[in-house]
Image (tube, rainbow, N blue to C red):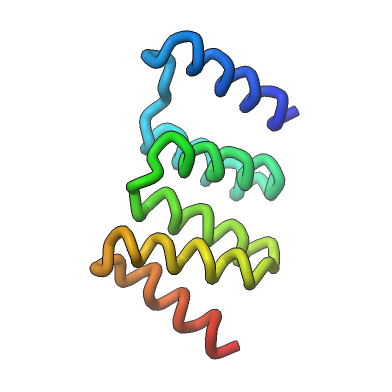
Length: 103
């Protein structure tokens, strides 16, 4: 399952930091999982991407989007706020955050 695969990935990264997938590769994987409606697996991938790239607004925005899709408004808001904190010019995150707060 996805959590076992990601645990193995995280363990390999600890042993060899060159085993890091790029932010883009992880994001693409997460988006494909979303397309396949594998929401739990997508959350795990996007969460790992925030661990691997904690200063990337995009990773937090994708993580937030997945929480929004799963109906977890509170965590979607929290992660969109983090995305905007890291990049105030992230208009997509700002628009989504505004939409979430209005509903």
